Image 1: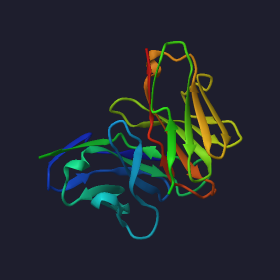
Image 2 (image 1 turned 90 degrees about the vertical axis):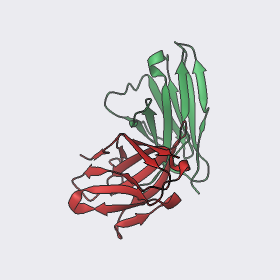
Image 3 (image 1 turned 135 degrees about the vertical axis):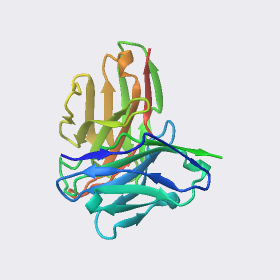
Image 4 (image 1 turned 180 degrees about the horizontal axis):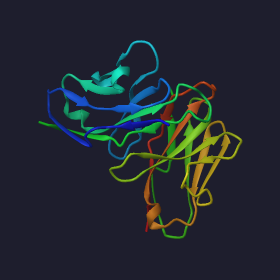
Length: 116
Length: 117
């Protein structure tokens, strides 16, 4: 079974500061990993994903994440926070295989607040 | 692109009535669609997986007679909340996956806010 743990349900940073949102996963097979962003009353937008290959993946809006197998982590970072980054962020894991077992398992989310 | 729409975006209904929510993939064929429910300040809970032309697969604890899912075409899935009650009030989000059996990426709709009075 797969699972995702997001440490810190709320993270607050100052504008211009580093953003670090933590995600750890559990999976019996090499997983696919995703970060999504959700603005109030909206659906989810994919920020970035890791499937295979380079472990440092870059996404939209200046975000990036690094897959660290030894630490079972996929933390999301952005060097300099912007006010528009304030939103809820979800880490998710799925199996690399297709078919009925290919579901997204979401973490509990981290609400990012950006202070002026 | 891969755009998924939902209709309506918001709906208010009276207790005991039924509400239908549509999920459409606008520019691709989706053999699989997913329905999620999100409680306030909570994560997404997968309710069911819907494959075109077959019965939906419901997650444990989700009442299939209450949440009717129909995936009638490769671009449309509907979720009907039957005999809705205030506890069914929630944010419902659908997602769609392309037709390739090995495809993994889901594209999400904008969500539907259901309020049952």
